[in-house]
Length: 322
Ligand code: AHG
Ligand code: MN
Ligand code: MN
Image 1: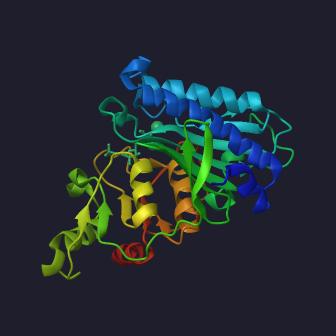
Image 2 (image 1 turned 30 degrees about the vertical axis):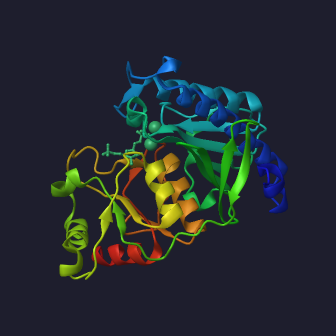
């Protein structure tokens, strides 16, 4: 099986970008070990703190953030980082070419129940001559990403990665500490009978999503004339991985549950990297009204509605929004 660096070199991926991706993965290997230690790590449970988004931080949110931040900033390959767990961006090497946005531990409510969690990352070029302390260097649409991926810490540790030449899976060989190519060119099936949504929010959704989900639930007796199945992992990384493996539609739509927070998922380090992975595998990623990767961000922790997955099913859902 092939290791990651030669696979990326063959694609013509620049060497400094490969080095940066390997730096992210060095942190993820350490996270994989810590997460795998479970209760033995002494790091399960919550801290007494909240992040800037008002969410209680898990001990592992803080620990994984610190690991990624330290390794990335020490490497010299990044001009600045943005993280779910950092209030503001953090400046790095002024001479570096890249910026990285990450969700150090996605699905962290799952840590205490030994269920799926992962790390999501997005890499873009830093504008030439830009100031590493300038937050606005991150205000670029997702289509500018030069690489995006996640590492899923499940029964096996799997990396999904794209540098714009398709989406690939690598599996961590824990005996040697190397990511080995286990699927070249993942392809999201165009059709599906599986959907993922937190159905407890149903009464708060907008009419378009209410109508779409009602028609799925109606199954073979409804307008879709076939039955659908539902899955919800409460970690986007787990749900998106399933969609990449066997198709499906995943959505976290706009809702009116909390008027101050109409959307849940964050654009820079959740929606954008997942959108690139899905599009590179032949799927669609939209807010309901526009392509996710076309959005011009105006804040680091900006949130967006997300509808992504199998091409034909996402298109059907988008038709309800017209
Ligand atoms: P995080 O743990 O990084 O805050 O992200 C959790 C996100 C996402 O991964 C998941 O799809 C969603 O929140 C789950 O939301 P519910 O708690 O509403 O199910
Ligand atoms: Mn997350
Ligand atoms: Mn997180």
